[in-house]
Length: 109
Length: 113
Image 1 (cartoon, helix red, strand yellow):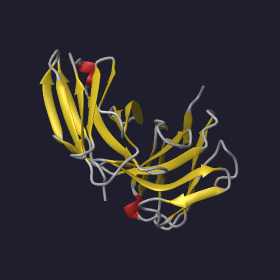
Image 2 (tube, chains in turn orange, cyan):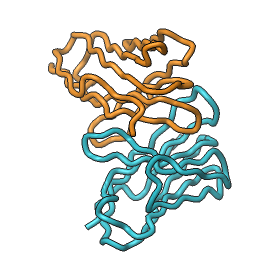
Image 3 (cartoon, chains in turn yellow, blue):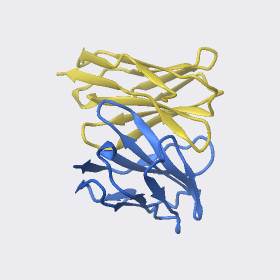
Image 4 (cartoon, one colour):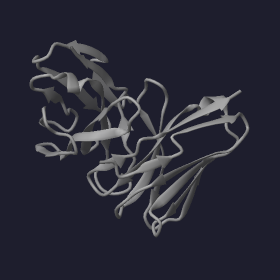
């Protein structure tokens, strides 16, 4: 069973708009991570947020974590066509990283 | 740095055949793992290792074996391939312990006919 579930499953926006993806999980975690996967490629680590952190930034990425609601969100600001990819959240309970089903993001030029 | 290298990139097997998917990393990562990704789904953990000589099962271990004789290599063996094992397989590595992101290989696309 998947620990994390992303919402929405698919998202289509225009270049320059912001994209928000949400992730919910079921049990306590050490940290939560977000990954990007371009079509036919491996996953690329974007950002990690620890269980005692509430918000983290990296370039155009902003991640929030609410452990009381067991949820996280990934915000991509000023999106670009190159951001088109699938985005996965993954929860780390120690030794096992469990992935959600992903959000497919399409950014139209 | 090469990162995580997986071979082969593509493979077609007949039902009942066996094969080994290779994974090597040059980052001196203690932790290595194998995932499978089926169409439209996230990744599911098959096996993982926290160091040489230590392996453990993940979420979907049946039909797969692993060994970890060196820090660098973590091969995945399919004992008797079945059509249900048609998938894309990813190897990943990381420093062991909390709060490290994973580095993924580019994947092996396996088809069992």
